Image 1 (cartoon, rainbow, N blue to C red):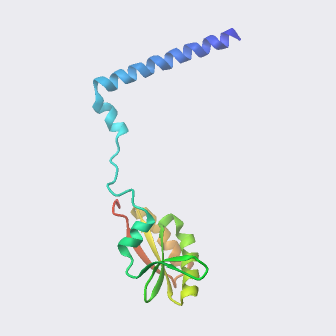
Image 2 (cartoon, helix red, strand yellow):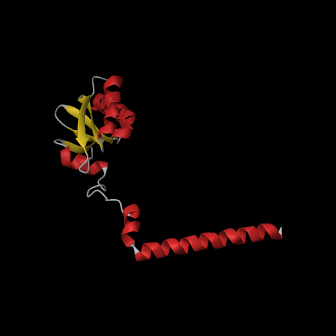
Image 3 (cartoon, one colour):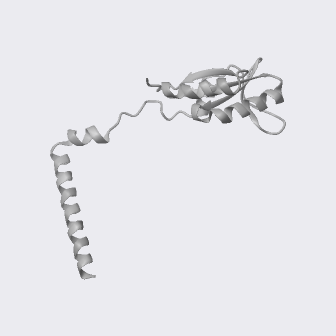
Amino acid sequence: MARRRKRLDIFSVIFLVIGIIGAFICYKNPSSFQEFSQKPVPKFSHLKEGDYVNMYCKGIIEYQLPDRTRVDCLTDEYAIEYDWAKKWAESIGQAMYYSKMTGKKPAVAIIIKNPYERIYIKRIEKANPDIKIFEIKTVDYHE
């Protein structure tokens, strides 16, 4: 048992020495550390779904139905569900439900962060071609 403890102590010392050397290198040459630790943070990456509703909705925002569910945006023509691209399947169901409850056409406003997320729009088109799709690119959208 003493051997195992000794072996652990040796590894602890080795990791401690490596950590000290790494800290010293970063202290002497901070630019070598910065290139790995500092990624540019998009200016507007903090925006939420509701922020996009407020920016793009040209109708009634958060229209409340009798069952207390809320349509993100209700216009003269559409009941629109706003959602992130990855939640595409959920948005279809909500848009269809809101359409039935309001008598308006179903629509989804899909918020995409990059071109790859367009695959979710294709899935909505295949699942239900009757749903109108509004594509919204985030303000920090990147190719």
